[in-house]
Structures are given as structure tokens and as C-alpha cells.
Length: 177
Image 1 (cartoon, rainbow, N blue to C red):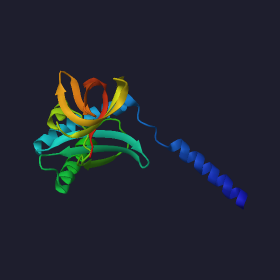
Image 2 (cartoon, rainbow, N blue to C red; image 1 turned 90 degrees about the vertical axis):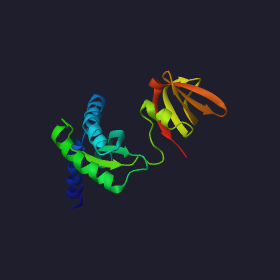
Image 3 (spheres, helix red, strand yellow; image 1 turned 135 degrees about the vertical axis):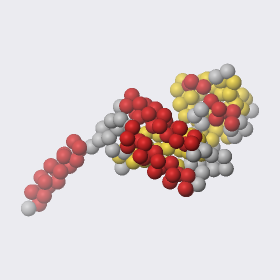
Image 4 (cartoon, rainbow, N blue to C red; image 1 turned 180 degrees about the horizontal axis):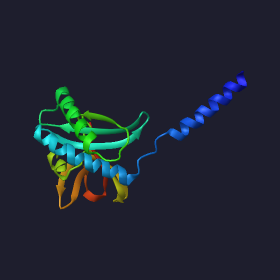
């Protein structure tokens, strides 16, 4: 009896492994994010909100499409519910070949991602954490006070020195406490 149970469990495990979703290919991931940005960006504008950032990734529970929205003075739960309901309908109709995913709509929170060039001027004087693709002045991680952006160079005050980081080299940039 015990031997049969082990064989059945082994077969079930092998079936589960073969049915697991594959990680979305980078080009599909970028295409999905671009399509979602086009669809949801205008929706957010019409509601008086800003679409801050979109993430599309695989997590333990499956794929997730996460939208970060904001407005001056902050967003409310009602704002998130409104955008979630409307964007869900839009994405179901117009988003191509994504397979199953969960939709989350959230405020960017205190560790807001800095994505657009305008963000680097808008949050001038704030503490930031920036990671770059290539080494800049011998380092890839910067933590300091944001001084702004000019001529495609983001300036950060790190320990009293100004680091000039090419905008196109930035992988992630976030506000920090």
C-alpha cells in the first residue's frame, strides 16, 4: 500500500512540474508592459491620476501585473478600486497573448520608483537609491540625495561628492527613507 502511494505521488509531482507556467520571455514581458502602459496611461489621465510604474513578473502564485498610480496628495482605496475595475476590463479585451495573470493596483508608497526623467527633477532633494547597468566612477549602487537631472545626467550627492550618472545606464531608482 505504501509503495503504491509513493508511485502515485511521484506521478502527480511529475505532472505538476510539466504543467507549470514558463517565465515570460523578455520580449513578451516588454510587449505586455508597453501595451498595458498605452491602455492604462490614458485611463489614469482621464481620472486625474498618474501611472507611475508597471511591473509584470512571475511570482509564487503565478504571473502578476502590478500597476502603481499616484496623484498630488496621494491615492485612496477608491482610486485603486476604480482603476482596477476599469483597467481589468480594458486589459481583458485588448491585451494580447498574456495567459492568466493577477492584476494589482497600488500606490507607489514611500519607496516610490523613479522612472520618468521628470521624476528626477520632481523629487530633487529627496534621498534615493540608484542601481546602474554599467559601473560609474567604480560603482554600480548609489545612495544619496537627488540633485536633479540635466543633459541626460542624473546628479546625486553621495557623501558630499556629486555623482553624475547617465540616465540610460539606470536600471532602478527609488526614493528611500
